[in-house]
Image 1 (cartoon, rainbow, N blue to C red):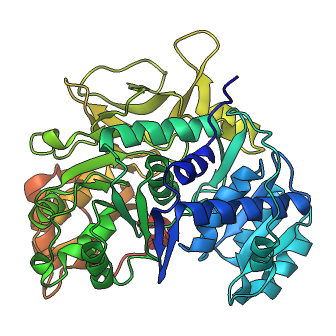
Image 2: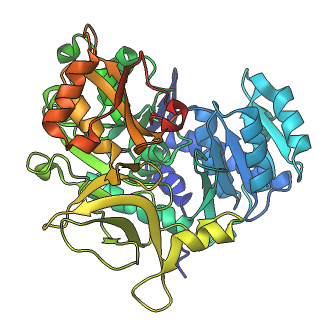
Length: 505
């Protein structure tokens, strides 16, 4: 009898089929599929010997490195649940994640081993510790022990990962993702991106966030190569790596593309191998679309929209980018999306409503948070099913294409009107001297909330508040025009590159 496909089979099957092919390029190392698979097997065996059992959570605390890649697949092979945490996470938040997840083991870098050991011991359910780095420590020893992986226990309904939300509006929530959820998402996204075995995908996005993690999952599922960068902090270095490694796929976020637009001599690079460029987090502004088209002349450009709770909601087919540049597209394959009003009634075209998602990618729920789960997962149109009620608002045109309006918590209520921050940000970005923009609502006794904008000037540009306000007045209704516009050297961003508006407030 055929066994069900699990997420870890992506690595194992590619290793059987393409054992000597380079699967991962990271720092100065190059790792074949056989080497990664054997390392993951050995670490899985070591985890099992240390008591990790089916369904246990293992926190992997680290950046974009070979150790984190091996750890992710090893946790799955150990029948456990992977919890990837960004290395920039504060100690108090890491302690919360250890306690909330009930982690059995923490895998982390040796440079902060003493701190990690203290956190592990202080957790309500103390967890074991595996450290890596400097060629010593229990992680390397575990690989050398060569323990065989434990017998396969999971089915595809078991959890594969807990992906914690950022917690900007409350405690972080662990999004429960099953093997079936993640396989469905990887299959759907790979289908429309046309990910092939000969792809070389460069990822400068954090693996601790699902957008970055799925670059690895999709690459390994196809038997492709992943070029893993620590970050986009040195964009010139990343661009050179794109050329040197003959990269074919380049995923990014708006802040990365804004930075690229400021680089000098970008047109001197040979990007002819690039087949696809993807964007998530927000719809691309026309100025960034133009830059990407000039830079990656032969590439298909995909604007996408999604969230941790279901991975991906929609994508804009590249052939529609010119005629619907502001859209985040149509539902991804094998998914249904619609909009509802405040009473849960479906809305027709040109109405703004809450986004509802139905499909195999929808999360199991929030870890140990039944009330929050019940708020998001509600009965669907067919008996016995649950669908995802997101916190996002979109409008839909007559062709079924979505246009992102804003998150429920971001909508500004000013003068009795609802102001979507994105519309104001787009108006500001239309000014040639604006590199980035972020808009928030601030308390105002008369208006309820006033619109306040923060902008970053493009290189060499001099921005005047009066000129920026005139740009907004030409493009926006009067109640949307910012009361205050502040020019700042940079906008606060999280590890994933998203602007953190809470810190602006």
